[in-house]
Length: 267
Image (cartoon, rainbow, N blue to C red):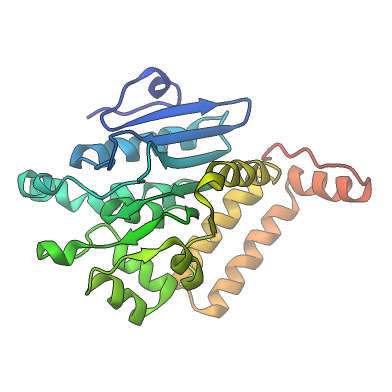
């Protein structure tokens, strides 16, 4: 098993995807690259997890974008691979797919065309999902006599409720980008030609904020997903208290009163 450092992967080649790092823009792109359908192989999921961990440790990266070549994000996984994989390998699938969620940095999924199966599950594990109007979301595993196995139905139910999740999972129904926006599981739905520019704008927006405050907010919101309201409010208070002593908060207050842009350093 390879373990990628924050620098090693920059010059490495991966099966099924590429990585681009632009430190001038503090951005990294993970690009699914097996067009036209960008099928995600079994082994690819573990490598994707390792790359997310390496990018999380990269000091020159503030925001990560998960996108794909061509007209489809991903039609899903390599079906035959499920029959060939060992039970131990299969047991790790959900952990690998959850890598964007565990990453301390903001992760954006840019979806167009088919966003099915594990492609959908990877997107659901990201913080923001930007869809073009061509996007079609589905968890089609019922057609194979299976169910989603990497957090798809679980995450979706948290976002859209039990009735709509049953509609998508038990009937293997496809949902358009606009309907996904109306149901609340994507952040924006834009014309296909505007997908990249919308993602670029979100990357630049997120870079303006304190890295420390962004990391804190992401972890707090994720950790509070299943917490009772009283516990969630208490956890929020503790995080707020810790940030009050940070250099970034001091800079933010001084910049506000000085009517100037803040320069955050993540400290």
